[in-house]
Image (cartoon, rainbow, N blue to C red; front, side):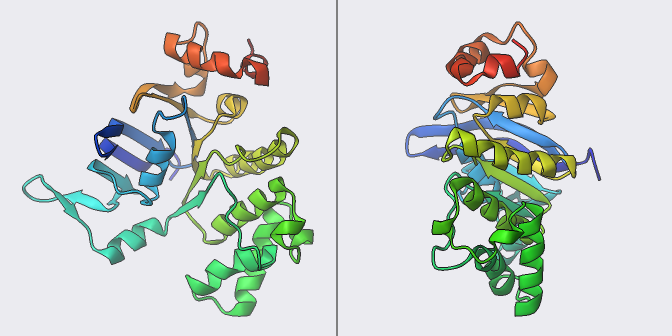
Length: 266
């Protein structure tokens, strides 16, 4: 399975009115690898991720998850054809997503937040859902916080609960949309540690991030988006090799005060 294509995007496009957010995106994400999307704000990173999750409908091009078209496919005449809702749901079931905001239900405990989808979506019996939820809370180091409510948890702990909630649905692919951007610096490390552990386990991950050190040291594939297009992509060691691509160099200057130069070996 490792090395095979998990996500394929061909000529992917998305616009909001006259504003083109994604233009002609061609990208492959391989099973068992971490692909990081980096780039300036407004470059299309989060929109691309939301299209892969089908939270946004792409306006052109094709997305395939494990070879199965997501949302739209090409008809016999080459025109795009919208797929049935049931087929879309079946393909989306392979995808888990973690957002910038934690989006936990405040009236449920950490255990309840993780178990709810198992009961409502997968229709697992209550006892089985609780056992599976506890196992995934343990996976992110929060078994002892099972009975705590979100208001009793730190931001890093809440984000780890959100990761456990996504993992509990047994996705083949995990999408992360700047999962540390809402956290104080001292809480960022605990979330990145969980993500590093997932990478070591061979989870396929597509990550939008401003954590340049994580991208440089954990990702196998790094994609630099700029002005709705892929400006540069390749193995992490190639993308971050000095001298950097001029536009990438300009972008990285923004993060020197966060120690990016040290993390990159600069």
